[in-house]
Image 1: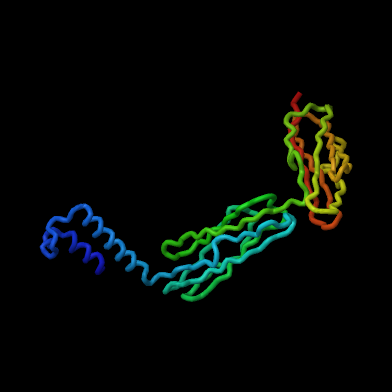
Image 2: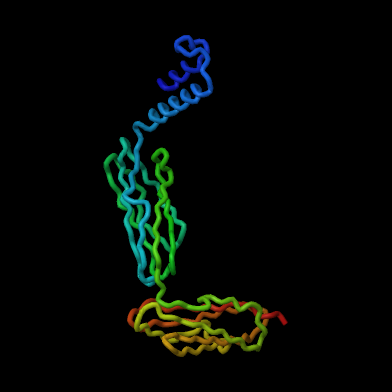
Amino acid sequence: MQVLLYCGVLWNPKLCDCFPIDKPDGTMKSLLIFFCALSFFSWRTSGAGLLLVSQEEIDFGNYPSWEARQGTFLLRNTGNSDVVLKRIRSTCGCLTSEFAGTSLPPGAEYPLKASIAANSSSGAFSKAIYVETDAPGQEFIKLSLKGNAMPLVQISPDSTVYMGKLAVGKECRYDFKLAPGIENLQLRLGEITPASSAASAQMDIKDGLYLLSVTVKPEQKDMLVYITVNIEVTAPVKPPPLKIVLRGMTLAE
């Protein structure tokens, strides 16, 4: 209230005789507005909570994509009143965070743990989480996790293939190359789902590369074709099976 009265004195034409400048120019007006706003902001936030984050970004660097990674952000209230941590929002379902809505008194700390799930990323990535609080000017705090998830196997042309429109009874063949990302990796052809005579697969190894051939021969017209070929990793690690997906649609006639 004191700040508002002060600003009112400066801008009241009837009280301008209190100041040595009779008609303030544009520069003087700008200065008056700045100091009034600064004083008002200080008055508004002097008793508020203030969060200090240990780090805004965690870099996991290069790591195996079949492994999970976890990091911790330390939130500390350096203000003069409590700060309520309301909720966490993330940009990706593969990122999980341990959080329980809580109130941080002045000087208190909260370790916010966030993790990247195993087999959820491949290659370079950057994920973000947002901490929603009631601290003035810190309603949403952005925190990031980044890294380079090295794939166990590099599949080309891709692990998902769109076959387009397929003719019933016509055989189509699709070839894949599977390049191991680590030494002594051993792969084995697993099951094909759904199990039917509409699809078959064969896998060989040549010059350190696994060569996979998938043959598709649709049996019914006007239907969605969705085939999953499972590739099992038998050594030196045993993560969940790799999946190669082929999808398309058979012609109505």
